[in-house]
Length: 279
Ligand code: NAP
Picture 1 (spheres, helix red, strand yellow):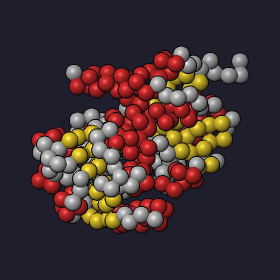
Picture 2 (picture 1 turned 60 degrees about the vertical axis):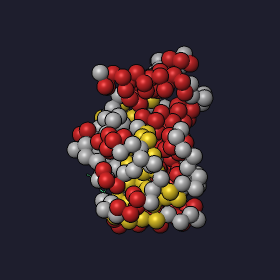
Picture 3 (picture 1 turned 45 degrees about the horizontal axis):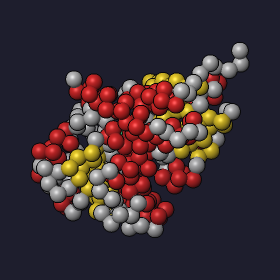
Picture 4 (picture 1 turned 180 degrees about the vertical axis):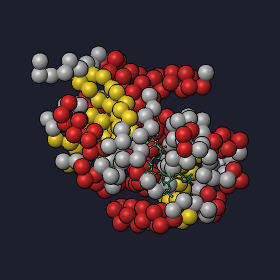
């Protein structure tokens, strides 16, 4: 036997969560595809990519903290991912590994469910792999983006790189800059600060949030983060991290299978996962 009986996909993360698997598997079932999805815990990224080649794994989602360090380990990086400077998806074509970024489109589609981003003032918190994609995607969609980060220097570097890539005027500042929140119509947390196993603390003081704002937290473990609880208490509209995960997973599904993603099936898996998580 020279082929696996199923086409295997999965994810590489230091903190694996079952939600991606639940969505992809629901999509495979909906289309009757002979695919399976495994979330792999990973410490050694280069070794894991060798395993991907050796075992013929078709596609892998790349999660925290590997999205930037993976770039030099790949055979090719598609143009959007190269411009963003982060990869969250790897496709294996007969041993040739190509990196893609589906986080950017995921973030834009998640925000668009509540407010069209064009012309809107958005403050993105964070300057890591995910924040790069979120800020780039929203600036590409016409939002006026300000990046704030705990390490201020990284926020300025990210703002400069997006401004250069898009010819947009992306600003930057420290996380302590409350004016960045006062001016924002949309606030997006793209840090890991609100993750359950990273302290679950909101990076924003509650007083900085208002009822006329939209607040998105891209963290999805937990789904209801401390930031979203604060924002809801202040009367803001909130978007949880599952919405971005859904939209970026649909794009991954298409890259892995070559078929349009059955979005309703993936969305239903997301709802079931949230209901299970909260019961
Ligand atoms: P990363 O590259 O490790 O970046 C981490 C970022 O969080 C940095 O900006 C870091 O600031 C900041 N940070 C960490 N702890 C903090 C704290 N206590 N207070 C303030 N800032 C803090 O991670 P990543 O790959 O960008 O992922 C970030 C999060 O996004 C993860 O929870 C991941 O699961 C989530 N994510 C969600 C989706 C989705 O589809 N919903 C997609 C991608 C990622 P410094 O620069 O100062 O260290």
